[in-house]
Length: 146
Image (cartoon, rainbow, N blue to C red; front, side):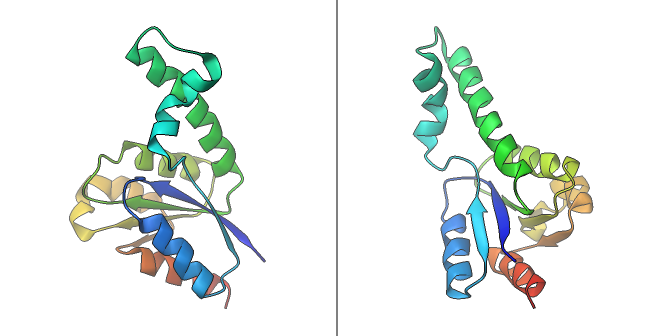
């Protein structure tokens, strides 16, 4: 058995790289997908495909349409979603991806520090598992293969 894991969350810290490396070291049969990790490409994809837009709002709209298409496809094809909530960045996309996964009946593992319990309490309640570290999320997935 191989699982496809969608990694939802901010793209500025190395948490995904850590999970990929740890999964590889443990020889876990996991395939990782997630949002576009190249921030500039994500912001500019609308204009790459549809051409220059007349203002920043329309530039954002075209980019988000294409990013949402990508996310919907990858989330729909995932077996499980790990949603990471750090303290440094706004987490709107993480919350949206986790909620979408829940709506699609995908198992969700939330990673969040205890300090973020209150703002994420409803989302946490809908997730299959809430952990505080990427290592704990990977341990939970390791258990699936025992």
